[in-house]
Amino acid sequence: MRYAMIMAGGAGTRLWPMSRKQQPKQLLKFIKSDDGRSISLLELAAQRIEGLIDPSRSFICTSESYRDVIRRDVPQFAGKDGDSRIMGEPMGRDTVNAVGFAAAVFQKLDKDASFAVLTADHVIEPRDAFRSRMEVGFKLVEEDPRRLVTFSITPTYPATGFGYVERGTPIRDVPDAMVGGKPIAFHVERFVEKPDLPRAQAYVQSGQFGWNSGMFVWKARTFLDALKQFKPENHEGVMKIAEAWGTKHQREAIEKIYPTLPKISVDYAVMEPASKERNGKLAVCTVQMDVKWLDVGSWPSFGETLSPDSMGNRVSGPAQPLIVKGKNNLVVSSAGDHTIALLGCDDLIVVRTPEATLIMPRARAEELKDLHALVDERLK
Image (cartoon, rainbow, N blue to C red; front, side, top):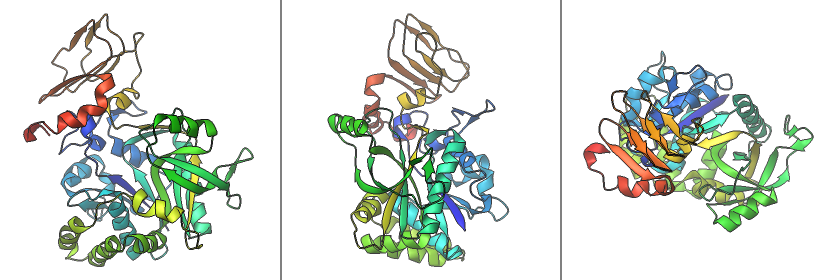
C-alpha cells in the first residue's frame, strides 16, 4: 500500500523573529489558504496529499517538542489511534535519518509499502498537477521496485541556492509518463549541489536540468537496502527503532538510538551514490514537475506569497503599515495594536513580533543566520 511522510523538523532561522524554537516556520500560520484563512506550511502540505494518500497512512516526522502544536493544528495526524502517526525526533539528525526512520516503520507495518517523502516548507501550485506527478512517481516504483524516484522542478531562473538534477534517458513504459507526447519521467544522469551562477545559467539554458525538490517516492524495502549498502550504521539504528515501534519500549528506543545516528542528508547519503551505481540493483529516476514551487525559507521568498501594491510593497499582518515615498519593502507584523511607519525607505524588510523587531536590507536576508546566532537564547 501507499504511505506518505511529511518532513517537518526544520528550525527556520532565516524567518526569525517569527520563526522560533517552539514555533518554527512550518507551524507559523502566515500563509493564506484558498478560503482566506491563515494556515501553516505544514497544514498546506497536509492538504496537498488529500485524495492521494489515505489519511490513516499519512505520517509526520518532526521534533518531539512540536507534538502538542501538531496535535492542535493538524489533528488528522493524531486521530483515533492517539498520535502514533507523529514520528517525534528527540533531535534533528538530517534528512536521511528522518527518511530511514519512516522506511523502517512502514516496512514493519506493511512488507510491500511504498511511500512518498514530502516537504513542509514549500508552496506548490496547482495541486492537481502536483498530485498527478506524484501518481506517476508511485507507478514508477510499483512497476519496478528497484527505482528511487525524485521530483525535479522546471527552473524559472538560474538559482544558486538549490541543488540540480540532470535528466538522462526518458522512461516511456509507465502509464502517464508521457504528457502531450513528451516524456516527464527520466533516468537521472547526475545530481549537482548549489552551482555557481555561470553553471546555473548553463544548466537552465540546456533544458536538461531541474531543481531538486527534496521530494521522493520509493519502496520502503528498496530504500532500506540502499541505506544498508551506503550507510550501514544509520540502517542498523533505524531498524532497532522499528523493532521497538508499537511497543512499550518505543519512546525509550528512539531517545537512546536516534541521537547516535550519523548526521547526513538523504541526497548525499543515498541518492548521489545510488545514481552512480551501474549494477542494476538500483535505478535512480526523476519525474519532472511543471508547477509553481516556492521554497518559503527566507523573508524575500515569503514576500513572494503576497501581492504587491503599485510601489512593489508587500504587507502581512492585522495592521496596515504607513509607507510614504518607499518602494519594494516587505512589512510583516503579528500584532494589530502597533503602527509601523516607513518614510523614504526602499528595499527593506521589517518584521515585528511582541518579543523582537527585525529591520534589514532585502539584499542581506541570507545573512540573517549570522544575526540569529548572536540572539539571546530567550528570543530564539
